[in-house]
Length: 143
Image 1: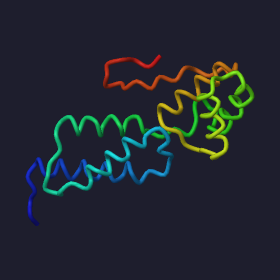
Image 2: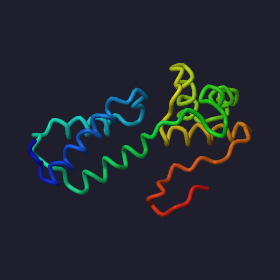
Image 3: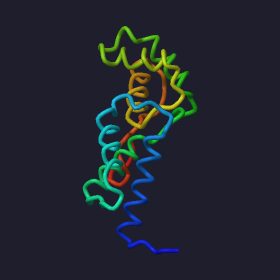
């Protein structure tokens, strides 16, 4: 069996991570430009490596695309139902966000989508703890 150089093994590992991200079943709502960029990375010649900035960007996308099925003991459906009761009090984008999630029957949301939904639930009076989407790698603690 032929051994690959360390850099090429790292590139293959990153390619696999990108393929797994693109294969994820949850919605790419709000991530269309990132999805397109990830697809372009995969179209490169397999021998071509990735820059440190590209590796960091893929890691950030993977982190923010972490799937959540609920928060604080509530399922996505329960949180959406609670937020929908107050949708008329939200601004247009927030109302659209909640109604689209409800219409799609989403069972999984990404980190930033969950942060929005939890924030709307808190405005609606549902007692759930804050959702902090920041990365622990940033040296910031979740509130």
